[in-house]
Length: 92
Image 1 (cartoon, rainbow, N blue to C red):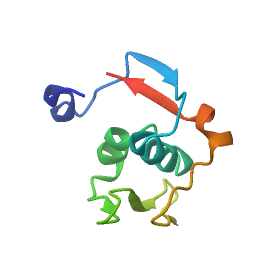
Image 2: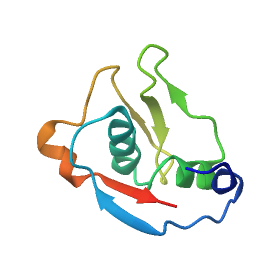
Image 3: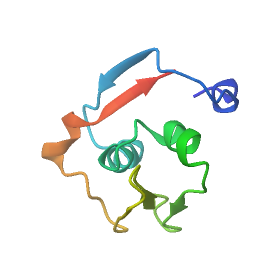
């Protein structure tokens, strides 16, 4: 993701693909999408809040949904292999 995209608050994705295998990035995208967001960029645009992360893994720890309830995530992997193909990876 380019730095210019991070500064542009109205950035829209140009394309979307599905994840093929699990990575740390796919894990975080899975967590954002479970909470109802496209990715970290959309979460920051809407909530304008800091994202809590686990210090040892870097995975997202807590997200606030659009209805203001919270999702709490474990340190370990939550996106199982059977769920990986459902994760959308957006390109800007």
